[in-house]
Image (cartoon, rainbow, N blue to C red; front, top):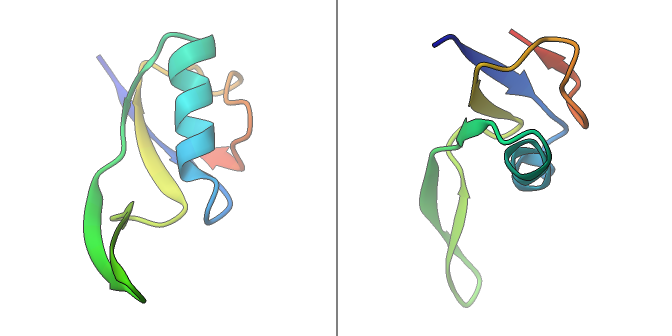
Amino acid sequence: MDWFIVHTRPGCECRAAARLACELSLQVYMPQVQQRAAGGMTVVPLFPGYFFVAGLPREQAPGAIGCM
């Protein structure tokens, strides 16, 4: 199975990953880390603007800027 990197606008990773997972039933991997923020800890993407998708045809990436 081939894995692709999907490039999104920063801050839109979760929305684009959820859309690909739900609408196209693709396996999505978006590593996240905890980061200190005002008032506590938040979870943010390890690679802002990017996530990984298994088996994504290049022409089927709704909400993506590009695929690598």
